[in-house]
Length: 261
Image (cartoon, rainbow, N blue to C red; front, side, top):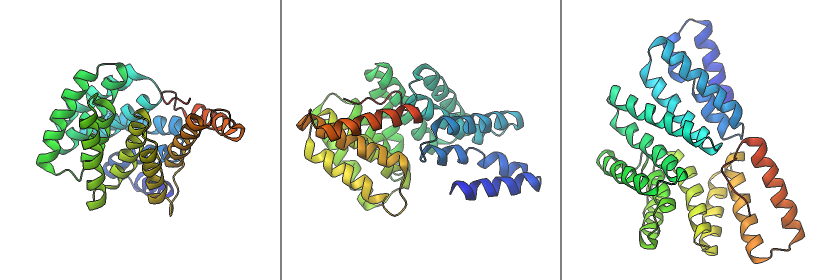
């Protein structure tokens, strides 16, 4: 996919098709993230955002700004991520894009959650879920439910969010939901120490990416299994090496906000 996007952008640039180029420039960053090239991905989306600003393409600015927020938050740059989310949200109103507004609000809620303001994050999620139920949960509903499962202190709410998200994945939805819901479901069940569900969600994420492996997804699968092993057998020497490998990988990629035991 990355090669195809690069080829498309090169052709658009060579042929002077500026509107096509600016509308799709951020996609190289989006795909590089799933290859665990997050620092490079951030550079790509920042360049895409700047190009969009220069030519006044607000829709592309909206997308690239939201993805900037995603990368920054995973890199632990929380305040910058929240600033980017605020601008992306503003752009959803300027472009009258209610569907993507729910997407942006999910990222804003994640930033608020990481910053410690879970109450405000839950309020944002509630509003985003209302929008999502109106436009159709298949677009970003599972991602919202995954974030809710991480943010809520109420066990019943968390369990219900995971069940509903799982059902939407099974019934069909946009592909990004599968990756992100399962990442969050893994973390949510790690938080509650539900070992069986951690294994289930980890296996599920590995299964859906088996034909086209994604380093990003495999990192979260391997991380979950290493944490489980540590909790069961904290002195397992092979797992100690695996944890060291994963910590090194996280540092290389830029996952500074993702902890290991």
